[in-house]
Length: 339
Ligand code: EPU
Image (cartoon, rainbow, N blue to C red; front, side, top):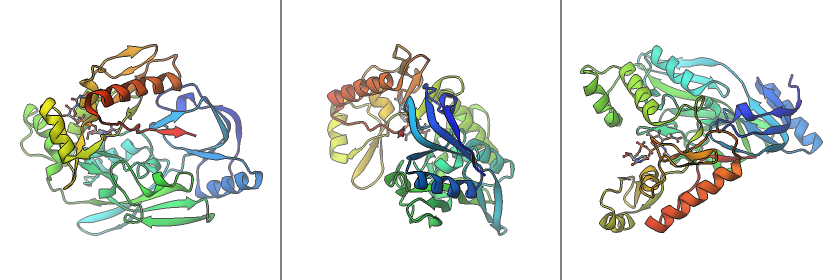
């Protein structure tokens, strides 16, 4: 049975640690809590929003309506063969704990997605990805509550319409509330091309026979070396998406900026490293009045205390303007406004 708290402090529930409180708040610990909570908001004609791990959010100081905090826990082996298995994981499980668990079992699939903050339920929304792998590559289906039809539905990977940091859920905000995901993992380890970023780590650590746990450990070391731990330095991960531009635009920019970093993603597009663009506008390590640009990775904006969302967004705007002035590229903010 769900119960409602009034004026709940959300400061500790958003990784940018902006001061925030919710008019009304409830924990969702099972699917029935969710259907009851939605019936309640419909009956009382109030607004609602779904809070997950709070690690990719731009939270308002006062969040009106009912905040539903997704805390459904559990993992279940759905089926398995000699080679692979399908694991069902509830939305309220911590993402990195899930990755660690699968590595301990020696199941392959999530190893490059280690140390991504947040909870499982949010992972398909922005199609989390790192080091050449995205959740879409292992996802089988998503179970969600459809707020319009007032019923649970299951969407397969095609229906989720995934693309870079985007999905059907992100394009239909407020309609679906994810309660669990099914992922397919492999029991047989195969080395694949996605591990390029790790080559230096393997050679420095004299790892010649590569095992699954070496990849996981390597990703943890690499991420910890360039991304701030939100428990120590408040941040929301990459603050901007890596912009996609045409090959001809990229070639033109390369004439004036031969060092520019871009990755071919299709016949028509190149994904440009936004961190490089921001660093090359001189922002890396910038700090002012509690907000700043992380000194090891310019794509990450930080909050060191005492500032508010407006100040961070003003900094983001200045960064966007300077990147546009220098490279004629428009950066897009990645974290989501809440509400
Ligand atoms: N770079 C710079 N300066 C910087 C930052 C990056 O020159 O300040 C250069 C790097 O040297 C590298 C290139 O830009 O050559 C790409 O950098 P990196 O490998 O750190 O990855 P990224 O493109 O900046 C993306 C994801 C991260 C993910 C990493 C690793 C986005 C928006 N971000 O960052 O995801 O961990 O790749 O795969 O796609 C997140 O979404 O919150 C996140 C951290």
